[in-house]
Length: 87
Image (cartoon, rainbow, N blue to C red):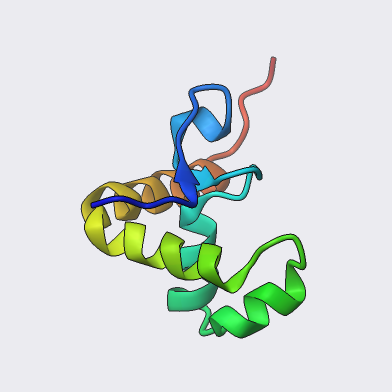
């Protein structure tokens, strides 16, 4: 399935899919909309550089790649909880 607003580049977010023309990860859209209950319309108001079409395409991409994005969300949550190692 084609997702015109979603791209992946190894130089952005470790290769995670992002909104085209931004560094805004799909996993962040999923977190805000599906986990925190923020509507797509609220997302566009809060993040004025995003369009409603981009937000909905990110959600569509998520449902097409649910296991991968869920794993990214889990991995990023675990990284934030791990204490940093002293240098």
